Image (cartoon, rainbow over all chains, first blue to last red; front, side, top):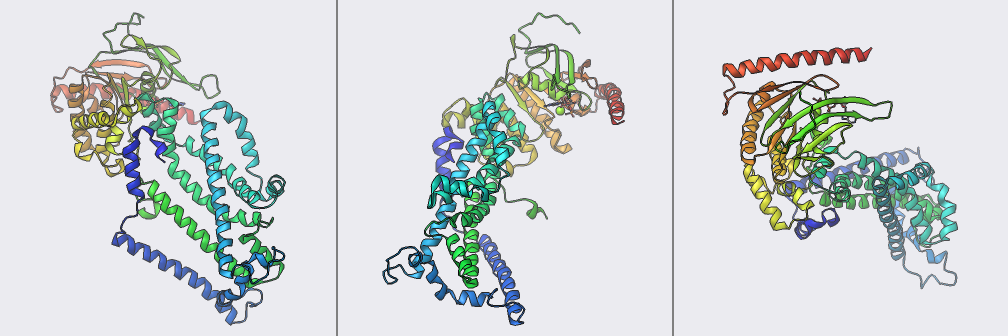
Length: 308
Length: 271
Ligand SMILES: Nc1ncnc2c1ncn2[C@@H]1O[C@H](COP(=O)(O)OP(=O)(O)OP(=O)(O)O)[C@@H](O)[C@H]1O
Ligand SMILES: [Mg+2]
């Protein structure tokens, strides 16, 4: 991010570093944080309660829709399925294989790594293409129509392409995440560039800024808040598509677990994995939110919610 | 209006037959401004007054070099205007400060474009902020300032470039009456100190009377110069003097005709 203001160099770097350093949480901030955790628990609790109630009344069949206390209680039993060694590695005996918990961690980390890699690659590519399209007229004319056309194609349609290009493994899964996000992120970048208040650009130009300087010093910082929001929204998209991509055979991966659960008709495993994915999605979004707050130090904490 | 094409270098800005058609060669093409002959002397305070949509902002853009004139020529101290320059600073109605920079970094923005060192930039920003009385706010962010303070920072940012002409597009229009009064006094001090010419767009006749050396009254669209009124009032000015009252009445009458015409035209367009 120091890129934004190259020749404001050192001082900016120092102040940014100071901002990225963890700070003591102010008491009112802590209270607000606790309150939001409380509401999260209440919201999940309410949902679980309704489900449990339906089970208690015999309205939902525990074999198809096992309520939380069943599928969560079944974790010790289910966790063994995360050990892909039992399925894939022929000749490895169960005894030498990693424990259920180790396998769970490996699976989660593999999927998360694919999501993050895809997200990073897609953002860098999309922002670069979007900026270049606005910077060079010819580039815009040559790329935008194709991007526009392809952005309406469902990522699922790319699945065979992913396999043709990358075989099986991490390659196709990351490719799928990138493909699912790239086109929309390019269009979002271009739209946000077009919406930069024109006066901000005029001011820089009257001060003698070149086109390059206008982009680096005005347009990129000006679109940064919106782009981080785009990134957060696309994070969920990345989580969705990664599961599909992982069904192509990737060794470890939550998509594999879901497929296994479906094929073996194991609802407990399905719901346990869903709960796990939900939690992971929430946690990664939270991490992005913190990043957002730290990078966008200049934005006041206000908005519609605050005004109402 | 004399329309001779000899440029005198003692004038800061010389417009000869200047006009602007927006979106030329398209179906949406329209003439916003035409046949503008206007000379602005160094250190002169010129106010532009005219109905909404008559092309006042357009003229400022042309003089700033942000847009090209489609008719006529604009000269700046003897040289044709061919693009933006830091000698001609533009100040807008709403704050155009960069929210991600602090006040002093905003003020020093133009210098950082030129690649000045941090010490240089800080010193220049401090000096400009002293001129507008906002040194204490130098480390704040624009969002933490009131509207009046933000406009003062915008003025400081323009002054830091030591411009020869300040182009101001309704800079105080978004401020409340009391703040605007204060800002007018402040602007007169800044103007006198800097020695720059000011071209100032406003809809407020009081503001025109208080600030101007000359008032340029525009016709409704397409904008032409209707008349130029000299403001003979001695400074410091008493807004309640009979002379001020007379000038106010004269400008009101001139403007009313044009505003009526502009409205009639807009109603005609609605059919
Ligand atoms: N960038 C632009 N592209 C196309 N048309 C424009 C552009 N800017 C202004 N115009 C048109 O030019 C005409 C003059 O506009 P301008 O903004 O100069 O008027 P103005 O006198 O400043 O009005 P106001 O007092 O409301 O600010 C208007 O009809 C407007 O629609
Ligand atoms: Mg205007």
